[in-house]
Amino acid sequence: MPAKKKRGAQTLVFDKPPVITSWASIAGPKEGQGPWGQDFDWSMEDYLFGEESWEKAENKMLRETVKKALNKRNFDEADAEILMAGDLLNQLVSSNYAARELGIPFLGLYGACSTMAEALLLAAILVDGEFFERVIAAACSHHYTAERQFRFPTEQGVQKTPSSQWTATAAGAVLLEPVGTGPRITAVSIGKVIDMDQKDISDMGSAMAPAAAHTIKTHFNDLNRSSDYYDLIVTGDLGKVGMAITRELFIKDGLQPEPNYSDCGVLLYDDFQEVNAGGSGCGCSACILCGPLLKKMTAGEINKLLFVATGALMSPITSFQGESIPAIAHAVAIEN
Amino acid sequence: MNTPDPKRWKKIEVEEYENLVQQTKPKPPLLKHCIWAFIVGGLICLLAQLIMNYLLNQGIGKVDASSYTSVIMIFLGAFLTGIGIYDELGKKAGAGSIVPITGFANAIVASAMEFKREGYIFGVGARIFTVAGPTLLFGFVVAVLIGLIKVFLSS
Image (cartoon, rainbow over all chains, first blue to last red):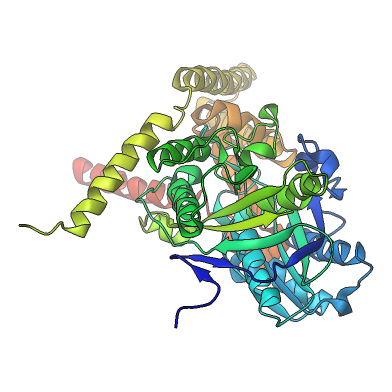
C-alpha cells in the first residue's frame, strides 16, 4: 500500500496542515544594522550578549528565542511538548545546553545551515501525525563560534575571497500547533545529499546550489506545480554566487527564476557591510524566516512561500583530507 | 548497444557544473590586492628599516641592532593584534601583512587570544601554535638541513 501522505519521490502533503501560531527571532549587531533590522524581535548590542564566552552567548540566543516564541502565545517552557533544534557547533552544544535550561523534551538536529527547514519539516510531521500539539522548531548560529571552529582565529589578519560568506549571528524559533491562526505548512520535500565535487571551502554557494535546485525541481515535479505557484521561493544561504548559479540551474530545469526567487544570505545584509557573497549559517535562514518573511505573510504581502534552507555538510577534517563538499536542501511550503 | 556508465555520466555532469561555477564565480581583484600588499608590506619594511637605522646611529652593533629591530616589530605586530587593528589591516593587505615578521606575531597572538577561554593549559598552551606551527616546524627542519650542509662543506 502506498504511503497516504507521500507524493512523488520526496514530498509529503499534510491532511491537516500545522499552523505556525507564533515565532521569534534574535539578530546579532551586524544583522540588526542590515536591511531587515526592524523586523527582528531583538537586536543584540554586542557579540557576547551579557555572557562570558561566544558559545554561552549562542546558547542564550537560542534559549531566549524559544522563550520569546512561547511567550507571544502566552505559553511558557512547560507548555511546549517538544523542541527540535540545531546549530553549527560540534556535538550541537548550543542547542544541547539551551535544552538543558529550557527543560523541554528535545531532539537535536544537524543539517548545517539547512537545520531550520529540517526542524520545521519534522515538527510539521509530528503535528500532522497527531503526536504533539505544541512543537518548537528552532536554529541558531553565531559568527565567532563558527569562525573559530571552521576557519581561523578571529583576530588573525586573513584576506577573504569574494565568494566567501559571513556566518550570521542570529536565531529563529517557530511554534507549530494543529489549530490556530497563522500561516500553515502544507507540504514539505526532504532533500537528497548532492555532491558536485566542489572543494573550495570559501565558496559554499557553489557547493550548495545543485542541492537547492534539485530539491526545488523535485518539489515541483512531485506536486505537479508550475514555478509561478509560489509568491516567493527563498533559498537558505547560497549567497550571491550560489544564487546566480541556482538561477542558471533553474533555467536548465525549465523553471522560471524571476522575479519570485531570492536567497536569505543575499537578503540579510547590505552591500556595504563587507560580507562578500552574503550571509550563511543556521541563523541566517532562521532569522529571515522568523523575522521579515513570516511578518510579510501575516500582512498578506506573501501568501505562498517556499522556504528552502540549504546546508553544506563538510567538516574542517574532511576538507583537509581533500574530500569534496556534500550539500543538502529541504523545502517547506508555507501558505496562508 | 552499450549501456551508459553512470560514473561517466556523473563525470560529465560534474565537468559541466564546474564550467558554470567558473563562469559565475567573481574573480578576486588581483591587481588591487597586489597594490595593497605592496604598499602595506613595503611600509612595514620601511618602518623596520627606520628603526634599524636609528639603532645603528645610536652606536649599537649591526648584529644587535637587527635583533632589537625584530623584537620591536614582533611587539608591534602583537600589540596591534591585541587592540584589534591587525586583522582589519590583513583583510586589505593580504600577503603584505602576513609575510613580514609582524604577521607571524599576529598568527600567534590571535591564536592565544582565541583560546584563552579554554584555560591556560588546554587553551592557550595547547593551541597557541595552531596557525604558526607549520612555519615553526618546517623552519626548524630547514635550519637543521642548512646546518648539516654547512658542516659537510666546511669539513
